[in-house]
Length: 371
Ligand SMILES: *Cc1c(COP(=O)(O)O)cnc(C)c1O
Image (cartoon, rainbow, N blue to C red):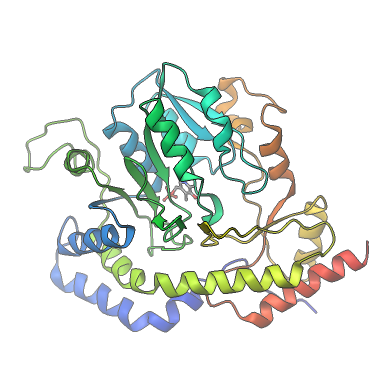
C-alpha cells in the first residue's frame, strides 16, 4: 500500500500559528500601507537582533540579496568572486549578474560546504569577494575563511539562505561577512508566504547604501543618488515573517531532533553516508541529505511506495546550459559532480510525524535488504 509521504509539508508549520498569521495579514490590510512601512522596520530590527548584527535590509528575494551585496561592495565587471562549485545556482547567478567572474572551489566531501583549504590557491589580484554558502544548514568553516579574507583584503558575503540560526563556534551564520544575504523563500528554515530576502551587516555605510539601492537609488522620494533597483520586502511578508521568526528557534530544535532520529535509524544501513555532526558547528538541517551510489534506484523505489524525495542538486552550476559559455566541462569539479550523482534529500520538515520518519527509514532498510 502506498504510504504517501510528501517531501515537505508547510501545512504542519502554519496550522498551529494560523490565528497569528491571520491577525498579521488583517493588520496590514487595515493599515492600507503596503511598501516600506512599520512592519518592515519591525522585522528588520528583530531579524538583525536574531542574527546578532547591527543592521538588516529587507529585499525582494535571496538572489537580489546576493546581487545587492555584491553591488554595495563595489564589485564590477572583470572582478573575480570565489564561490563553491557545489551550490544552488543563485549564488553563481548573482556573480554573473554584476558582470563578475565566478571562480568555483570544490566542496569538502565530509561537509559538502566549500573546502576552505582550496580557496587560497584560487586567489589572484582580481579577486574581490568570497561567498561561502552554508549548504543544507551546515555552517562553513567561517573562522578559516575570514582569516583568508583578512590576509588578502577580500570581502566576504555569506549566502545564508539555507542556514537561519546556524552557529559556528558561538557565532551566528549571517554575522561573519561584510554583508550577508539570505532568502525567505517559503521552503527555507524561515520562510515567508511568498518571495522575500534580506541582507545583514554591521557596517553603517553599507547599510545606508543598501537602503538606497533597493529603492530606486533613493531615500528622498523622486531624488535618485544612484542607479538602484526595485527590490523591497513588502509589508505583508514582513508582518508574516515577524510572526514566524518567533517560532524559528523551536522549529530548529525540531529539525535537529528529527535529524538525530534519522541518523540513529539509518546508521550502518547499506552504503548510506549520513550527515556528520561536529560540536563546533550547529547544523540547522534545512535539508536532510543522505548519499548512496544507488541513488536513482533508491529514489524510484521510495517513489513507488509514495515516499517523495528530491535531489539537491542534480546538475551543478558549472554544467548548466546557462553557463556553457564559461567553457567548463564534465570532470572539472569531480567532488561536486559525485555529490550530484549520489545525494538524496529525504522527507523532512519541523513537526514531521515521527511515525512517518520511521516509515521512511524502514522502507530504506528494506530497499537494502533486497540488495
Ligand atoms: C534559495 C537560495 C537562494 C535564492 O533565494 P531566492 O529567494 O529563491 O532568490 C540563494 N542561495 C541559496 C543557497 C539558496 O538555497
